[in-house]
Length: 317
Image (cartoon, rainbow, N blue to C red):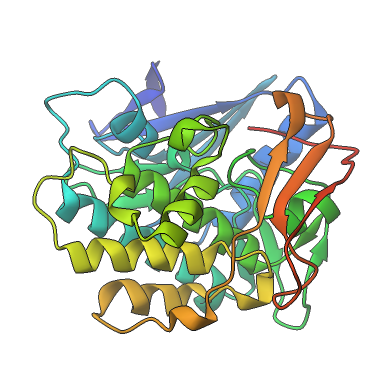
């Protein structure tokens, strides 16, 4: 029984702290997300996934009760007001990258049916007392049976993390999560937001600027000054893995199991196989406006070109 709710934190009768998530019940979408989240994660347990402990429905109140994580979300630690109590040095950031990758690999390849999260971003990665990352917020997740290649669905997620083929055509595969994870890695390494459009002294998204630095051989300019001590070889490998994850052609992106392997082992990456990233950007910064795909190619071998497409429905979170 939940006896106290305060600032998204609750205390059970046995004194256990829990995280409390209240969902809007004013719209059908809120109800659907509530039911979807329960159905998706009710029996899922993994060290890098937030555990659902229970739920409550009373009147218009719909509440999910999760395990409590002491260090809040990654975006607050990484992109929010800097706190001397939370120092994300390179060892912690690399562990967060690997842990998040393992959680996604579990969802994509070990669970039956598989799960595509659809909203991988810094605010949905929670950090426990030891800074172990835990993927949360499964309200947009989709079950993904083994025998299908993709799901055609309404577009939902967060601008800046959306894979271009999903953002433009509503074509969802596991590789959409891989793309979002690649963008997340660049945020973790750089300490910069993927949605801000001023990097490199020009109007460029973080991913665009990273690719420019890669072409110029200046990737170290991407690094957050608060990384502390780090292995230059390891950091550069992580950035290149992020670029492999964000290639425009979904079929060229690695699986999450391959990503875990590339991050956790000192292996050589065949950069001859690396192609430019797909960039999705909304013009004007408002959902429903004309989005553009910069540096996009029809396939991995054609010349890059700029295109403009129309999206009829966007659900930013």
